[in-house]
Image (cartoon, rainbow, N blue to C red; front, side):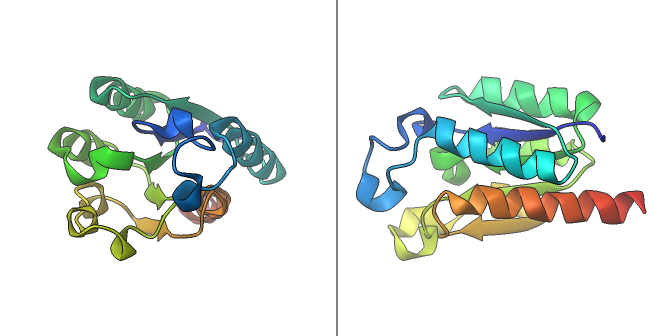
Length: 149
């Protein structure tokens, strides 16, 4: 088994299933984590799943992933559009990075169309609901297998 994949979630995702279900659905973040764990285990991968409303905590986890992680899947939520600091931290990470958004940010307000994280991400999954996380775990498995072999 490789080093774990860090799955990082930004602000307000702790309210998943309760906040704007017409946009984000009814599944909770615990449901997403369980699905990611199941998908990762099927691929022989481990995950570290985190959520924070604090930008510095997400940056600290990215720094931790530099030493302990094989890849990062990140849903930076609102930090997508504002955080050069998260971009800088991701730029210091050598492994693959995948960006996930539950909603299709390009069908929403204009300010959501720009992503600092996309400047570093190896791929972006948006608009597939929480299923986007499972797709990201699957893709990360492919990227890690390709890098190893």
